[in-house]
Image (cartoon, rainbow, N blue to C red; front, side):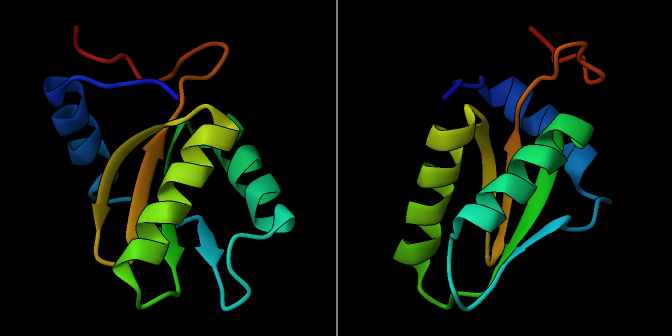
Length: 98
């Protein structure tokens, strides 16, 4: 899991603001199928929003940690039921500030 600086997180939050969630975590939780969809979305977009169905804050935090650990992505922000994660592609389309 990569660590982002505060400046990089702010930049990515700005980019993510107008984006819609591309993956939904439903009532069955974080299944292998959901993790596969997250992997595909990260490969296509680098920066993605994930909508979580759980009302439990601790469950959403655990999902964020598990997603980032399994995909090698960096957590950007968790606001309500929306998780934002980032992972640079092989040819990064998003240039992060230093």
